Image 1 (spheres, one colour):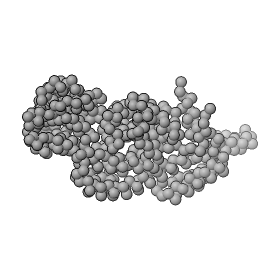
Image 2 (tube, rainbow, N blue to C red):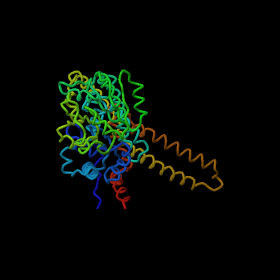
Image 3 (tube, rainbow, N blue to C red):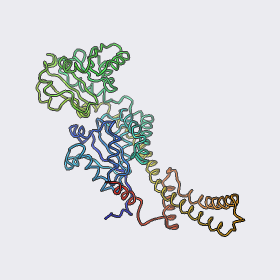
Image 4 (cartoon, one colour):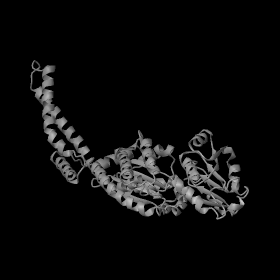
Length: 461
């Protein structure tokens, strides 16, 4: 038996995990590579109570935004989906999940896009990641009007906050914090100038790590990558440093010759395991014969069991918190300025989303008027003799009926549309919508939500 939904509206919900409350051991099990985002959206929208969905998966967070036809049932379905895809029991997962609804979900994404929720406040990489979500979602069924509008608006907010508050100016980036962490953990007798540095990978993040190492005075390092082209491009761009390229097949040999190893690749499986490292020679005497691994990948590139070995010390993205305190007071002031902007933008987005409620009424009112017009035109033509009816007469009568309908609908349609710029206009618009629904009998016994749910159930084999 189908449960009635006539009193329940669809909800915008974010369900997620973040670096602030969830250890990397759990986040990496839920991480979804960009290539898999369309598949994840499809699976989520295949759930009975989920109409739209989008995934934001980064090294610091795993968040799923959905439009749920039933808030309670939708959350339960998404939680079960997260559990089944990650292998984490729902009971354990629920200890770390955060849930935000409607206005709070909007506010959260705008804070994320502005860099306020980042481990490194004001960092710019998250805005690029939000842009990538929109790009990857184009043409994907389930990346619907609500979630696409939300993420596009979040991009606008992220740009506006950075422009008007300069929150990114002087802010610590993830890449600079990575290098800073490594420098902090070097033994007193070692220095970043003479420690043997190894960077695995040559993507954007690794290039930034290399730049920060050079800024710290590092004159020589080894870069391991699948191909030499990217490493050569980095060499052309960065002067005053000797960069030695090594192929991926030489990675373990290079690790054995390094004192500090930086990793941040998109590999879904660990590249460096305990059995690899325990056979390697110790780090240099200056390092206390202890090798440092700084792994900011999610999923992690360095197996967690390596930290059991006395000859190594492993740091991951969660350890960056030690570095983040720098410039905190100035960035908190800028964050307060950013919240004012986010408040304004959240209000505008919520008003726009609320105004979408009138769209079904507009469509139903037009369809109702069109049915009346067609019936009356046919009645009129039926009273005329065959001699009086020709193409010209039919067109005149049809145009007359259409013109009357359009003029009659103009006023009601104007009062069903608003740009969402002020709450008074929006409130009046929604009142007008309900009044028109009652006057013309546009409301049906089966709600739009119930129709959608029934359609989903009937599609299932």
